[in-house]
Image (tube, rainbow, N blue to C red):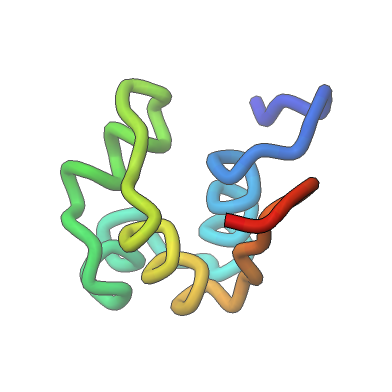
Length: 71
């Protein structure tokens, strides 16, 4: 079940994957992201790099932005 307490990248990506109707493996393959990395990220067992997040967001048509400041 997805947490509704605060928006997270993990939850946004989970919702976007479900909305595609595709498997996590298919999204990993089509986005160019390692399937084991994506599986562990979605299971909450590891983080992902900004580069990986950018690839996933681009494929899933999500906008990756910062809140509260410049980087």
